Image 1 (tube, rainbow, N blue to C red):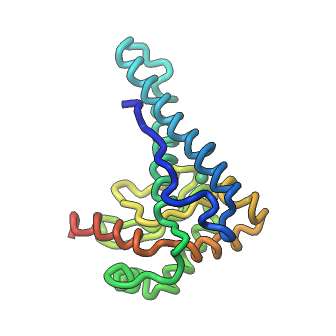
Image 2: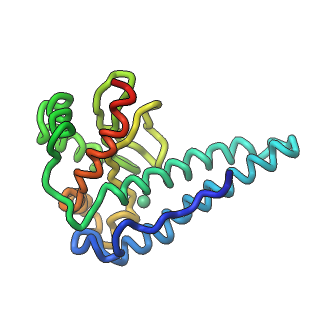
Image 3: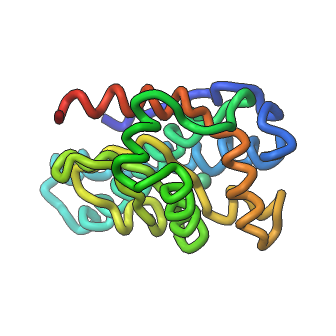
Length: 200
Ligand SMILES: [Fe+2]
């Protein structure tokens, strides 16, 4: 389709300070996320041209660019919406019950998620796996390596260096702690409610 567009952030660029700086959100959204949107559109244009011409010399590369940039676009959109200046705290309601059921406790889930975030070369995700019918944590490298097919991310934490290095330097753990100060659990619960009834 080649007409993907970057939505504005759902809050002001300085809204998540002091946890995430205005400078980092500006670069991260306007430069990095925009780059993935542009990359996805360009790759789709290449694929359309190649289908038309029958010359598939650049097709394999473009297909790789679709999953890299497309996953980058979709995960960043989730990440922005997963945060709020009014965030923090812990989940409640059905989501909290499900986390306790599938991971043992909120604390056990959080420790596993933090381990994923500390080691990932891309993202830590909380996903709903519709095959096993359970929540899982997933450790993603880049934007698309280590994905679990069919799973639906409901919470995403970007641990690329562009996400935190300007604010925290190599202290990624401090950034992970800061993320939990701004997680919008209502948004995560909405994502859970939108996904799970389709499969259970
Ligand atoms: Fe990012």
